[in-house]
Image (cartoon, rainbow, N blue to C red; front, side):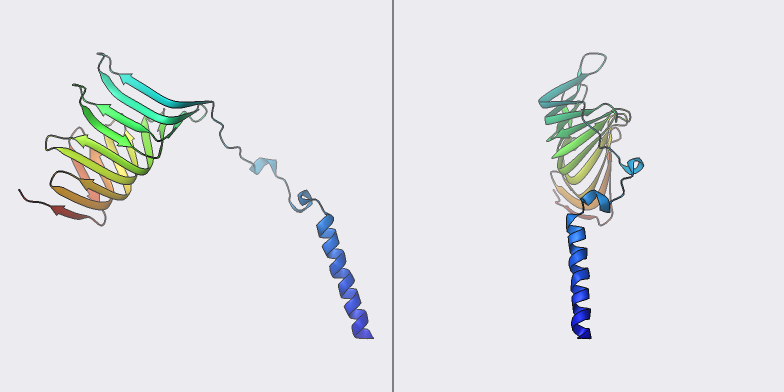
Length: 188
């Protein structure tokens, strides 16, 4: 008899607790704190299939930027790009540096491009054509330099090198590959 009474009391308590929880609104289980809620930035403007040109003071074309979609965030001073293609030209309008990626962003304040996802970069040097593949690439417009990471693969006409990171200075035509570097050079 005591076992049956104890069993019935437990069954009533469990059933009552279940009904209390089932019928309670979800807001009663959370404590709203307005100071901790952060809003995601909202784009001020959107454009699709854009093509933008930047010219130097003497009228020669410096940069070309194409993207399938552009989102402008004025509060962040930033542009977000989908499928960007960025081309930097030399003084004689030959392609100096061409970058393609899945997504990218441009910071207006720092003048730095950040490319993410299957980055493919090509440029021409005195030695010949160079191709770079990486997970992400940062390109500084002010310094004319780049930094790549995420499985870097650098290919020239007779050399193939891989590593974790790459630093490039286009003014000095120097490249530095760091961490887990492997290379193959075909002799002439």
